[in-house]
Length: 96
Image (cartoon, rainbow, N blue to C red; front, side, top):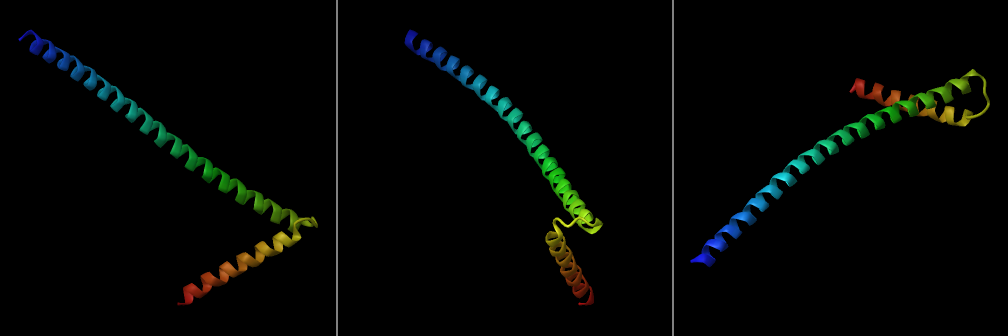
């Protein structure tokens, strides 16, 4: 009978430890999920900022070329041609 009671107490202690560990891991998981969400949000913001900066850089390159700088003229011409093609596609879609 004594062994049975000791086994029950031992089982209760193990269950308490297991529940404690479960709650701890559950809260830690929630914290990690929040951190992951925050980091994903920051990453999206940084990607948007990078895209905006890249666009601004490209516009500055075009402006410098138009301003009379002889460097990057080929890139500017290609960019202008790409923009014209994109505008043409938009016009075609509007007529459909």
